[in-house]
Image (cartoon, rainbow, N blue to C red):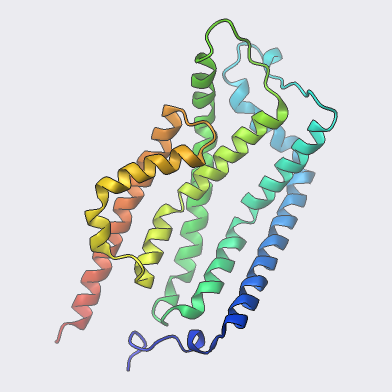
Length: 256
């Protein structure tokens, strides 16, 4: 038998306890990485706050208006913890993705393990690209949300709600941009059929819009469009990848 025909030997030998032990190991490493990233976020807290305030400052009339109002003595400390925690998650994302790969790698065929480096690099790049797109879209989302209140309201943002809004948007967009990696990986594992993806385009559009509405904290039309359109394009890219992969496999299996 060739490598492509042989079942992964490591997967066959691993018991349920060994799987759970391996999962615990990967989770521990991931949490340690998040903790280290959180320390970095704590150290650079002031700089991060300045960057997160920029979207709000870009839509107010004067620099003096670019302030947030703490309503609770404990709120600022909780905000610092929140920003440090989310910073840790974002900074640790390459390590987390590597641990995900290491956990599933024993169940892959030898020829499938060559995707390790492309998987990590592309997944990390897409996550940061999604987070960057969210950061770019925040001023427009804020402007739209504020405009819905009319002229009788003056916005006085609280630190917890404002910073939570931005970091959740960035994480949501980053996770959303992992969509093509997930679809491609499921096709490699044989859990999703390329033909099924092609037939399910209409359902995919509805599902993507519904998912974006759930995972994004604002739910405004601009944010829905900014994330939904790339996710559907990623869906088509995943289909294209699957078709190319099938053609290559058929060509390799064809008698010479």
